Image (tube, rainbow over all chains, first blue to last red; front, side):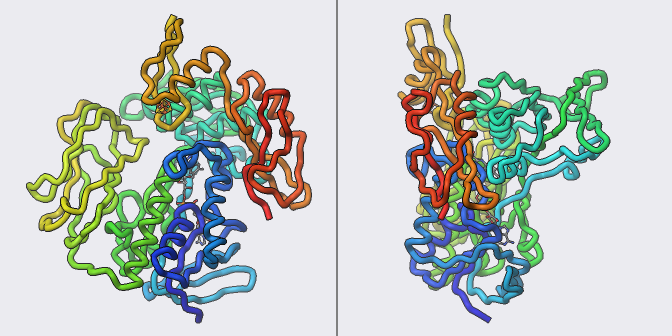
Length: 416
Length: 114
Ligand SMILES: Cc1cc2nc3c(=O)[nH]c(=O)nc-3n(C[C@H](O)[C@H](O)[C@H](O)COP(=O)(O)OP(=O)(O)OC[C@H]3O[C@@H](n4cnc5c(N)ncnc54)[C@H](O)[C@@H]3O)c2cc1C
Ligand code: SF4
């Protein structure tokens, strides 16, 4: 069995950043395992621009962004295997790989999971009505069009107004499809305002808020999609139907961290569907780390890169034994905050920690408060907080020293 | 009359207001003011797409306009892009159409294919 010091599963933005950072921190025996035929992950299909503003202070397309990291991986000589799937990982960190040459076992001293996320599909949202062909997720439609060059349909209804759905509304319109509308069950869009402007308004594509698909009609292929208005509890209001003749329904209804491997290993999982981690991105299994979309779903790749680097540094500390893990404090979200990363903090933490969280619903004029027992660590004012925007708050090391009680992150004095 | 729209220059998406004298408010940075002025005088957009790679099976390469182009030319430029195919290897920055439709913009490759 071959041995590696650090195995990275997934060669997307998170995995590449983790590998580069671990290498630069002294870990040289690294292997990235990627199931696709190229490095870069989901960014390979995100050919639009808008990436890299934080990282490079310029606006790049997805492939341009990923190439900067791919080049570094090549220059540093970090090893990677393409077209190779990780089938299983044991608690002892024995990894089962599968590729053209068969099944291989490999033993790693540390592992970083950077496997990304998957899209919720028709089954996951219990889409009502028939199940003909022509119902596909936005990411799949994006892959068909941008990687293989096939348009998924000609007359299209999109359910869900997240960024991927908006980007696809524009992309398919440009390639000659007619996008009839975008329907969003919530009273607000989960996409960036900028994408509503440049992807919908530019092409006069209507956005119906508080509307969902109440029925799909079609024998072998989608023929009609019926939308209905919903009330504040997201229940369909009768007699509000709108009928659309179309051949395709595109679903952009959420992403879920891809984590069966971690679950099988007995990792402690969180409400994000990703694992619980500490400030080093390490799970409850020593030497097993997670970052990127398999930890929690990100909207901006620059933050994925940053998180990947954190995991890379964490793994290098673990491998070079500069860790001095003691008891951890638990970090919990409360009062309007849906989740927080990390979920654990070392009592002896002596470094700056970035707390990342999302709110459950749009909130104005709130104070974000972080406290340990009764002791206030930080309180900052936020004029607007929306669920589609991940919030990041950096807390200095001095404020995290000598904490003894578990940590809460909560909202105070808010207008809903 | 005031015009209002969302700034698309960065993900922040500020709500811009511009009056007849081209005074801009609502922007959080100078780029927003420039965008608002160009939006009411000659709106432009970046275009991205992908084109076939002749000598590779089932492979496309992504492309973009080197600078934003007039909004009314978007569909015509996409048609120009759809006519092209290229040969690998490709390098980021390779120009495949120079000065497309006299816009001053080049169509450039955005992906390295070995
Ligand atoms: C469809 C889509 C559109 C997006 N658009 C934007 C945007 O416009 N702007 C922006 O800033 N951000 C965007 N994002 C967000 C951001 O780009 C992504 O969050 C980021 O690229 C994710 O990086 P990652 O490394 O976590 O995951 P990924 O890029 O998904 O990488 C995961 C990698 O792991 C591999 N893998 C998975 N399982 C295994 C296994 N068992 N064995 C081996 N390999 C495996 C996969 O093949 C993949 O390459 C988008 C995200 C998605 C999903
Ligand atoms: S005004 Fe500046 S900060 Fe606001 S969206 Fe435009 S570019 Fe971004």
